[in-house]
Image 1 (cartoon, protein in one colour):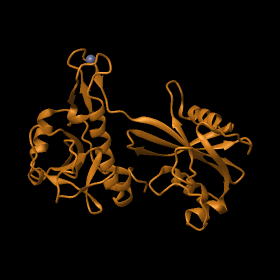
Image 2: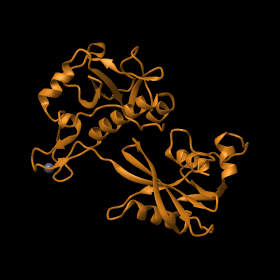
Image 3: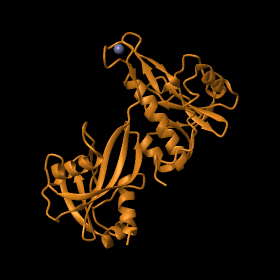
Image 4: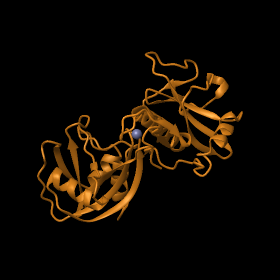
Amino acid sequence: MLSFTGNPLDRASAERSDPNWIAAQQARADALFLPIWQTKPLLQGKRAGFLAATEFGLKPENFCVFLGLRGEQPLFAVAIADSEEPPLRGLGEFCDMRAAAFVLSDADSAIAGQAKALIDWHRRHRFCANCGTETNPTDSGYRRLCPKCGAEHFPRTDPVVIMLPLFGGECLIGRNARFPGGLYSAFAGFVEPGETMEEAVMRELKEEVSLKVTSVRYHASQPWPFPSSLMLGCYADATSKEFRIDEHEIEDARWMTKAEARLRLADGIADDVKIPTTIAIARLLITDWVQDA
Ligand SMILES: [Zn+2]
């Protein structure tokens, strides 16, 4: 499975807005807390570093969000105050979320990604976008309420289309100027207001590589907690192989045959071109396309 997908928790959305229910869950002896410090989850080796409240000394002022129930067991994320040196020494190590995704199990990466996205959203959305007043978290972390104007604010999930254009057994991959050295990937962009997913795919490919596509098809999605995207993986049929790169965004683009893609997926070509890593949905789009006879 793909990193950040397949979250196994029951989010108990009907119960979690009841403060008494949440307080009872938090007080359970088997409740576990995943500390997040500077957007980094705590890891214990290759596992998410869930701790019991007594292990790290949970205090009433610690900000927690409810992640869900694993069976009967309640899991929370807890925000650890900013400090220069990593806290909770001896209990695990805080690890960059992207790096963590490479070592965690799929389930742990999905839970840690949920925790990171939620805690990070609260850090960066403390004030009402409508009137500027400081808002209060409610619904165990799934809503913030403005005490002045009554506006409700919900954790963001920003839809991003990510697509592989296809033509006659080849796919087009591109190099964004911001990509690390040698990396070519699927094309991507935020869905804009008033736009369908399919329209966003067509617009982005027109803007980035002047490529006209038809038959946009949804394939799979992936929560991408950097900071709060939902990647919508698509294929689209190009009407021709001709493209022209928009040099503001794209440095280079190239068509890749299935034979070449198979070799690259197996690390079988020794050159400077790199394809996306295993945690990225762009790689899944390439892998599934290659398998599709
Ligand atoms: Zn307000």
